[in-house]
Amino acid sequence: MLLQARDALKKVRDQAESGFSLLELIVAMSILAIAMALIAGLFISFTNNFTEARSLNDSTNVAAVGMNEVTKVIRAGTIIDVATGTDKPIFLKAEKEEVILHSYMADSSVNPAPILVRLAVNTDRKLTEERWNATKVGEQWTFPALVLTPAPSKIATTAASNNVIASKLIAPTAAQVTAGAKYLFTYLDINNQPIATPVATAQLGNIASVQVTMLVQADATSRAAPVMLRSRVGLPNLTSSRIGLH
Image (cartoon, rainbow, N blue to C red; front, top):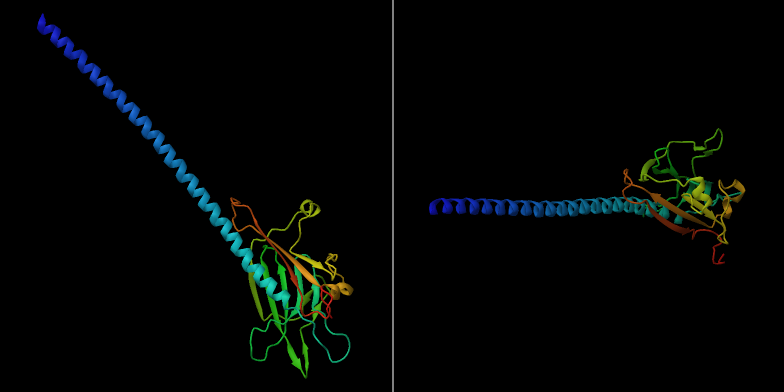
């Protein structure tokens, strides 16, 4: 009888120990599952933040490089003196996403010469820079002609160089423009007042500065917001300036 009681007690104890071990296993597995979920969440969050930061950095770099080149070209805009008649203005064409101008870039210190430059956004939303070299006849610089008709206008000869200086530019919608958004180029007179675009031929000589607004979305997934850079570029080579000097 005593032996039977001892065996029964041992059986109960074994069952109790077995049940306690199973409970421990369940608790341990639950804690492990929670920990793994937390780690996975942190990893996903870190990855998303890293990807967003990289996308934002890509857009910033694209906009910064493009803005630097556009600013450099426009700031070097120059009037071209002619032997007789009216001097050639800085701008030949000024539209929302296209500008053609004479610019004295002086890329070479040996016999520096002005160039004709076209900055324009193409159908792929890439900002391109085309350059045409000048030819010196006597003491006068001459350039390939701007052909206005048939539209769209174009330069008579092929550009000496054609480079993409920025990509994935975003154009504002009509509603955004109504709300105050700007196109790539905004032309201002000597009083900092906007000139209607496209700028009429008679008004091209009144452009005293150009406001450049570059909105870039380099991330195709739009995980990061677009980057906008804005700069107002003065034209120091004008015969009259915005500060009243002549």
